[in-house]
Length: 240
Image (cartoon, rainbow, N blue to C red; front, side, top):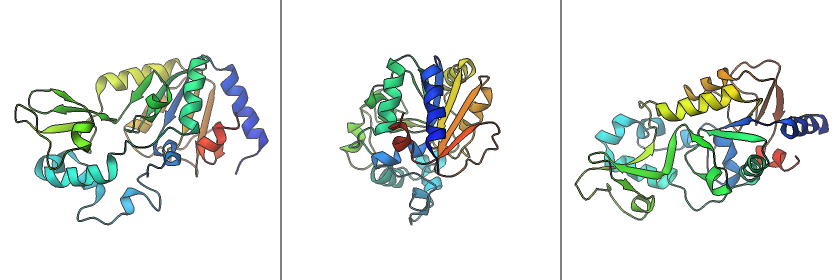
C-alpha cells in the first residue's frame, strides 16, 4: 500500500511539472465500470467459443465478421459510462499547464469526455469507424444501434478504428506519443502492468527526471528509481 510520503512526493512532482505525460492502460477505466483484460474478472477469463484475443484479431474480423461483432458489441462497445476521478484530474492538470499529453492504450474515449485535449490513442477508439472499401466515416451509433455486420452505402464492411491483434499501431499516433514522452519533464504511468507491446516500449523514450508508476501490483517491466504507488489510480489522484 501507500502512505502520505508517496502522496506528498507525487503532489510535488505534479505541481512542479510543466510538460508531464500520462501513460495509461485499462486500470484507468476500471473505476468507471469498464472491465480490463488480464485481471481475475477480466475479458481473458470469460468463457466463449473462441479466446477473446482470437476474436479481437484482424484475421478473425475478416474470417468471422459476424462473430467478431457479436463479441465486440457485447463486451467492447461501452458508451454509457462516465469519466472517473483519474480522467477528470488529468484534464484539470492539462488546463493548469502541468500535463502536456495523455498517451492511452484504452479505446473508450473517456479522457476526451473528461476534457483532455491532447490525447494519443495508441489502440484507436470505438468512436471512430470507417468503411474498409471506400473509407467513409461512421459514428459509433451505426455500430451500437445496428445488428449483424454493419455495411456502408457502397457495400463495404464497416470496421471500428481500433487496433486488432495482428495490426500495426498508427504511425502518426506513435510519432506524436514518442515526441511528447521525449520532451516530458515527468512521466506518470497508471493503470497498466506494462506487458502489452509495442505500446509499453514507448516509455523508453522518456529522458526526464521523474517517473511515477501507479498500479494495482508492480509492473511487469523492470523499472528502477521510480516512485511506485500500489493502489487505485482514481482514488490516489483524488488525494492530490
